[in-house]
Length: 186
Image 1 (cartoon, rainbow, N blue to C red):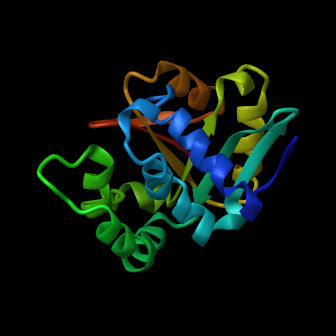
Image 2 (image 1 turned 60 degrees about the horizontal axis):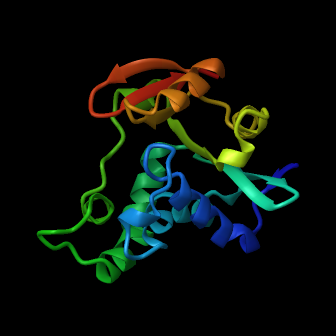
């Protein structure tokens, strides 16, 4: 079943983020704090754009989600103002800080040229038990129905499964710098 996000789902979405946080593979072994990845990559979407958050639920519970921001620039501005400051105190930047803590202190900004045509962006993650059943496509299409503009996603080069997934939904690679940027014009 695909449904809108509810605040009681927060922990499940953080867990899914962690269990898919290494290019689709589990990342629990990479972080001392199991909430860190969710704080950086899920929490702000749920706090600032909960109407663009959807989950898939099976008999065992929530097994996937899709989240989005309708205006990447405005979303990043709001994160800088209302999200990152508390996390920067909680997770100080040290010489040995992991990539997520570095991201919290020096978040990348959306490319200004990219957001002219593709102002929205989204993320989708599924646990292994939910893959191959059509849930991912249904989740993404549910979010896309609520966006009335172009949307982009970032995918790691080695995550070939994700690249194929986004291509199957009509996204095309438009940049292949640090991460692949794939986009869909709505």
